[in-house]
Length: 230
Length: 307
Image 1 (cartoon, chains in turn blue, yellow):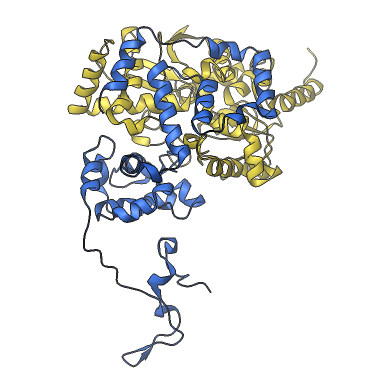
Image 2: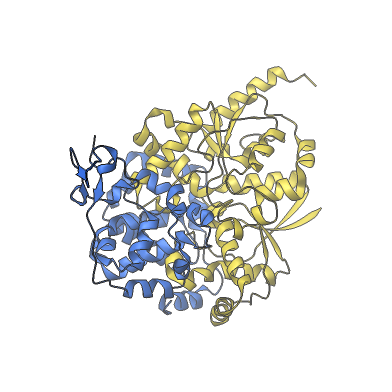
């Protein structure tokens, strides 16, 4: 049996944090078997709390302080089902205990939230968990941009650029910008993509996307959105 | 005739015209006059949350234009637009500094003001709750008898419950929504319940995280298929991106069991109301929805009594 297999949320621990013995007698009582699994004491003496301040003061992360660590968010989480390291309860815990090292270690996991709002819906304390996780992702993006996945950065920048500049979303334009930002431009010309493009050209959908236009007097809003600090 | 303000959004205006046009066809049959929100902009597509307060600008702008047109209630087909507009309306209604900030943003961009909270309704709950299933049943000309349809709600139609009209006004269940089940039953279809009715398709990271989104879409499609569905009924163009246009990715992730025709529920209503598949643009779907519907209609021709 794997080490510490009886522990709930086992994926949060590494092997060297768990102690297990073949035979263990404490104070004359034999506790071999299921009850002899123990965790080494974890001491963290220098909490870095500026990330907590930044997130609780941000627009979307303000509800983080309501959290009571019950774990309802994580129990229903879509992504946790696919990626065991993705654990919203733990992310909130790390923010509030100043474990920036752990957050940064998981920089490539936290952004993978799919925004399905199961967590927000389940939360008994009205934490908007989905947006708190987004806010943690944004903090990581500002603090350690070099650790973030290229695709995450390209996705963020592409949507921001397309929506702020044009005010409306043209999906082919969006996909083209995303692929060229990630250096995967050649994927635009695969046979499957060509087939889809031909179909859309024939049935007139390409024309619809070309003439989507901008909202009236958009330039003023575009200026304001691009330059104003959030 | 009943006048209803309607917000199609970017995606429905272009690539996903099938959803927009089928909504309009169905609305016309049900004697609703749809008035488009003029000078619309994108709703934010659910991808601007990280921008904080600015994520409310685009939805607030649309709601302000709605009010300027003299309407206070809007019907939205796209689930993402529905979520974004509801989120802003809810946040504005909470009041305090946030709503002052939203008002200030609109003023700075020289847009009409947001004076009250508009009511944002989803097409599905509007059809079930305001139009009524009895009225819909009266319009059914070709009952979908024998067509096994798996409903798929996605996420943003019923979550988070406290912001959305589907839950607050219409009384939808946030864990087990059932309006699409009820609607499809009214059309005469065999409704196939499956475990992935409300599982997320990974739409937010459709572009950036193909591994997760491929596995999530694969799971939805294969669970619907192994529950015995002929076709999956959708209500969100972002889900259509993953489940229909990128179905090949789902098949790569979980195998051939994920190959399933996918179409919008409004198209199914249109078919039941006696419209032809080309009027409803069923051929726009990448999966073989057209084949399934044509097969169904040819079967119906033999079973319907000759008039």
